[in-house]
Image 1: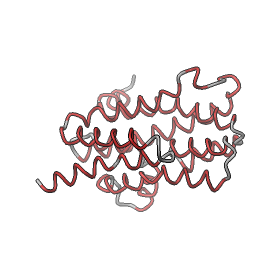
Image 2: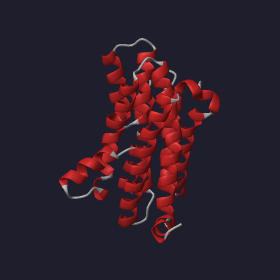
Image 3: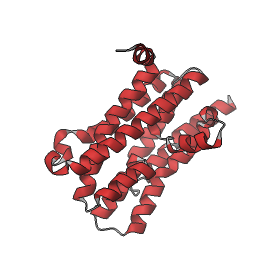
Length: 226
């Protein structure tokens, strides 16, 4: 291991960001396999991962197509789930670069994982590093996994048999744990979980996730009053 690699691996947020991207990449294989089985072409699946780059929205779109839905329904569902990234962008303004071209690149990397890793850091420099390392790592491995799933779909077979469907929930849990050390964030998470559990049986896919964000809104209001 050379000195540069040792220096990179020495910082925990760099290691965590890289390993998180590697874990998410395994779920990219699942997306590639499911896309092909749903009748989505290899080119379309790979292009979605490159340009859309938001796993939940991609799975939702493929799910609609697989169920026989029309393209507009697939687009609407994907946009609904992707709406949360707009909220992430507001909180990530502090880590965004000043140059326009770099900001455009950074905007593509504003996802659940990069946002959570950046927010978990104690200072601005580490937050910026965590954002870029995590975002680039997830982007690379997600697209590599998609390509592998598309090419090796017949060999992999049913991705659920391999347990790949557990990769995303495990990743989200790992991102959530550091925030639970603070009482207010723990309360926000509990409120959001309760909202999701109550609304999942009654609302369309995607809406419970968005409504769960009200947990953070409630606790923000409480803090403001205090």
